Length: 140
Image 1 (cartoon, rainbow, N blue to C red):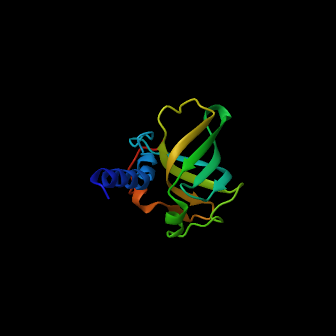
Image 2 (spheres, rainbow, N blue to C red; image 1 turned 90 degrees about the horizontal axis):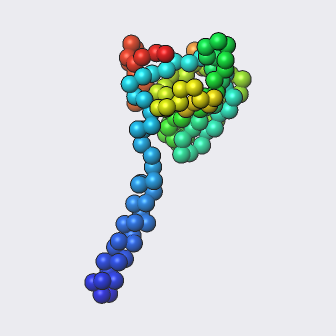
Image 3 (cartoon, helix red, strand yellow; image 1 turned 30 degrees about the horizontal axis):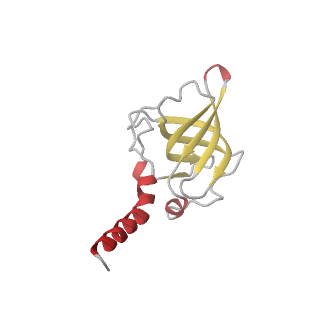
Protein backbone atom coordinates (compact mmCIF):
# COMPACT_ATOMS: atom_id res chain seq x y z
CA UNK A 1 0.00 0.00 0.00
CA UNK A 2 1.30 3.44 -0.91
CA UNK A 3 1.92 5.89 1.97
CA UNK A 4 -0.65 8.29 0.50
CA UNK A 5 -3.31 5.55 0.44
CA UNK A 6 -2.44 4.50 3.99
CA UNK A 7 -2.76 8.10 5.22
CA UNK A 8 -6.13 8.46 3.49
CA UNK A 9 -7.34 5.22 5.04
CA UNK A 10 -6.17 6.31 8.50
CA UNK A 11 -8.02 9.64 8.22
CA UNK A 12 -11.14 7.86 7.01
CA UNK A 13 -11.06 5.47 9.99
CA UNK A 14 -10.56 8.30 12.51
CA UNK A 15 -13.46 10.29 11.04
CA UNK A 16 -15.82 7.34 10.96
CA UNK A 17 -15.05 6.30 14.55
CA UNK A 18 -14.73 9.79 16.08
CA UNK A 19 -17.80 11.34 14.46
CA UNK A 20 -20.38 10.20 17.04
CA UNK A 21 -18.25 11.59 19.89
CA UNK A 22 -18.24 15.04 18.31
CA UNK A 23 -22.00 14.91 17.77
CA UNK A 24 -22.86 14.64 21.48
CA UNK A 25 -23.99 17.86 23.13
CA UNK A 26 -22.69 19.35 26.35
CA UNK A 27 -24.42 20.96 29.31
CA UNK A 28 -23.76 24.58 28.34
CA UNK A 29 -27.46 25.14 27.65
CA UNK A 30 -28.33 24.64 31.32
CA UNK A 31 -28.02 27.15 34.16
CA UNK A 32 -25.84 25.21 36.61
CA UNK A 33 -25.95 28.09 39.13
CA UNK A 34 -29.64 27.64 39.93
CA UNK A 35 -31.52 24.53 40.96
CA UNK A 36 -35.28 24.22 40.63
CA UNK A 37 -37.46 21.99 42.78
CA UNK A 38 -40.87 21.52 41.17
CA UNK A 39 -43.90 19.45 42.14
CA UNK A 40 -46.01 18.27 39.26
CA UNK A 41 -47.81 15.50 37.40
CA UNK A 42 -46.16 13.23 34.84
CA UNK A 43 -47.61 13.60 31.34
CA UNK A 44 -45.12 11.29 29.60
CA UNK A 45 -42.09 9.17 30.54
CA UNK A 46 -39.73 8.21 27.71
CA UNK A 47 -37.24 5.58 28.86
CA UNK A 48 -34.84 5.10 25.95
CA UNK A 49 -31.40 6.17 24.81
CA UNK A 50 -29.72 8.53 24.30
CA UNK A 51 -31.50 10.30 27.23
CA UNK A 52 -34.63 9.64 29.24
CA UNK A 53 -37.24 12.40 29.19
CA UNK A 54 -39.81 13.09 31.89
CA UNK A 55 -42.56 15.43 30.70
CA UNK A 56 -44.63 16.91 33.50
CA UNK A 57 -46.93 19.81 34.31
CA UNK A 58 -46.17 22.05 37.29
CA UNK A 59 -48.20 24.97 38.64
CA UNK A 60 -46.70 28.44 38.29
CA UNK A 61 -47.70 31.95 39.36
CA UNK A 62 -51.36 32.97 39.08
CA UNK A 63 -52.49 29.35 38.75
CA UNK A 64 -50.93 28.94 35.31
CA UNK A 65 -49.59 25.48 34.44
CA UNK A 66 -46.11 25.20 32.92
CA UNK A 67 -45.15 22.19 30.82
CA UNK A 68 -41.65 20.84 31.55
CA UNK A 69 -39.35 18.33 29.90
CA UNK A 70 -36.63 17.03 32.22
CA UNK A 71 -33.72 15.41 30.40
CA UNK A 72 -31.90 12.70 32.32
CA UNK A 73 -29.06 10.33 31.63
CA UNK A 74 -29.05 7.34 29.33
CA UNK A 75 -31.64 4.64 29.87
CA UNK A 76 -28.91 2.02 30.12
CA UNK A 77 -26.99 4.00 32.75
CA UNK A 78 -30.11 4.71 34.79
CA UNK A 79 -31.19 1.06 34.54
CA UNK A 80 -28.01 0.19 36.43
CA UNK A 81 -29.30 2.49 39.20
CA UNK A 82 -32.67 0.75 39.36
CA UNK A 83 -34.75 2.74 36.85
CA UNK A 84 -37.11 0.90 34.49
CA UNK A 85 -39.75 1.98 31.99
CA UNK A 86 -42.20 1.39 34.86
CA UNK A 87 -40.50 3.85 37.27
CA UNK A 88 -43.26 6.37 36.56
CA UNK A 89 -46.29 6.77 34.36
CA UNK A 90 -48.62 9.58 33.25
CA UNK A 91 -50.70 10.82 36.17
CA UNK A 92 -48.02 10.14 38.82
CA UNK A 93 -47.29 12.99 41.22
CA UNK A 94 -43.55 13.73 41.37
CA UNK A 95 -41.08 16.26 42.72
CA UNK A 96 -38.33 17.06 40.24
CA UNK A 97 -34.99 18.69 41.01
CA UNK A 98 -32.81 19.99 38.20
CA UNK A 99 -31.13 22.84 36.41
CA UNK A 100 -33.29 24.89 34.01
CA UNK A 101 -32.21 25.58 30.45
CA UNK A 102 -31.08 29.15 29.87
CA UNK A 103 -33.52 31.55 28.22
CA UNK A 104 -36.68 29.54 28.94
CA UNK A 105 -38.43 32.09 31.17
CA UNK A 106 -41.92 32.86 29.90
CA UNK A 107 -41.98 29.91 27.48
CA UNK A 108 -45.01 27.64 27.49
CA UNK A 109 -42.81 24.54 27.58
CA UNK A 110 -39.54 24.62 29.50
CA UNK A 111 -36.58 22.27 29.69
CA UNK A 112 -34.31 21.21 32.55
CA UNK A 113 -31.37 18.89 33.20
CA UNK A 114 -32.61 16.29 35.66
CA UNK A 115 -30.83 15.72 38.97
CA UNK A 116 -33.36 13.61 40.84
CA UNK A 117 -37.02 12.77 41.19
CA UNK A 118 -39.02 11.96 44.30
CA UNK A 119 -41.97 9.70 43.56
CA UNK A 120 -45.32 9.97 45.34
CA UNK A 121 -44.34 7.05 47.62
CA UNK A 122 -41.25 8.97 48.80
CA UNK A 123 -38.77 6.92 46.80
CA UNK A 124 -35.94 9.07 45.45
CA UNK A 125 -34.57 8.13 42.05
CA UNK A 126 -31.81 10.06 40.38
CA UNK A 127 -28.43 10.37 38.84
CA UNK A 128 -26.18 10.07 41.85
CA UNK A 129 -23.35 12.05 40.31
CA UNK A 130 -25.71 15.00 39.79
CA UNK A 131 -27.58 14.89 43.09
CA UNK A 132 -26.48 17.88 45.19
CA UNK A 133 -25.91 17.42 48.90
CA UNK A 134 -28.56 18.71 51.30
CA UNK A 135 -28.64 22.50 51.33
CA UNK A 136 -26.78 22.91 48.03
CA UNK A 137 -28.25 24.78 45.09
CA UNK A 138 -30.91 27.43 44.93
CA UNK A 139 -34.56 26.37 44.96
CA UNK A 140 -36.95 28.54 42.97
